[in-house]
Image 1 (cartoon, rainbow, N blue to C red):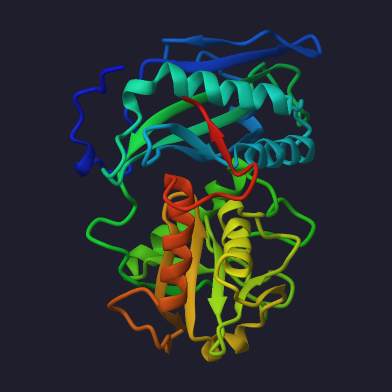
Image 2: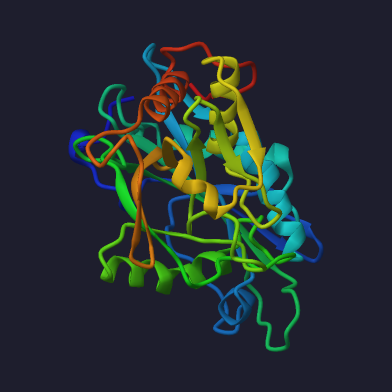
Length: 341
C-alpha cells in the first residue's frame, strides 16, 4: 500500500485524523459485533455518564515498521489486560481481550498507509478508550458504553535527542492509597493537569509525586513510572499499589535482567535514597525512557552524575535495547511482538 504524503521525519506528537477507527456499542448487557467506521465524530447524550461523572478509561500503545518491513505492535495483550483491570475498578463492562486484540489488528491494517516507515523515527500511536454514553443524572454507573480505538502517526518524543529533564517534588498528591492510581482512568489525568501546568510555569518539565499517606516514598509522575540505577549498576523501580503498572517499565526490567545481565529490584523507594542513585529515568510508551538530570526539592537540587547533557550509560543501553526489540533489530522474547502485516 502506498504511504500517505506525510513529512514523517518532522511529525510532532499530535493528533492527525486517519481513515478508519473501530467502535463497539454496549447496550442491554452485551457488546455488539463492532465495526470499522470512517466517521471520526462521537455522538452522546448531554447527560452522558462520561460527561457527568468521568466514567472513562483508556490505553496507549504503538505500531512500528520493523527493519524487515513488517508492521508490528508491542505487547498489546498487556494493554488489553490493563484495560480489563481499569473497567472492573470503574464498574464498566469488560471488553473481551481477544476482541481488543482483533480491534488493534483491524485498525492498524485499515490505516496501513499512515504507519511511518522504518528509520523515520515516527510510529503509529494507538488509542483504545471506553466511556459511559447514556444519560446518568444520579451518581451511578452508566448502562450503555462505547469502546473505541483510533490511530494517529506521531513523531519521536525527543526532537534532536533525549536530553535530560528537570523535575520537581510536587506538593499535590497523584493518587490516594486504595484509590485509582493503579488503573488508567481518565480522572487520574484530569487531576494531574493543574500540577503539570504549574510545574511548567515554574520552569520544570515534570512532577515527582510522593506517596499520599506518608510523603516519604517515590511513586511516579503524572504519566510515567520511575526507573533508577544505583552506583553499582542495579536497576530499581518503585513498588506501590497506587502506581500504574507501566508496560514499558516491566519490559525494561526484563531487558535489564535477561539481556544486559543487570540486577533488578522492584521495591519501595524512599525519597531520602534518591540523592544516592547514579541515574534516573521516566518510563512510558511515548519516549521509552526520558532521562532525568536534576530534581528540585523545594529549592534543594539533587543532580545525577549523568548530568544535564546526555542520558546515563545504563538507561541509554536499556532504551537502545528495547527500541531494538520493537524495531526488529534485536530478537524479541516470545510473545512480545504481534505481527500485523
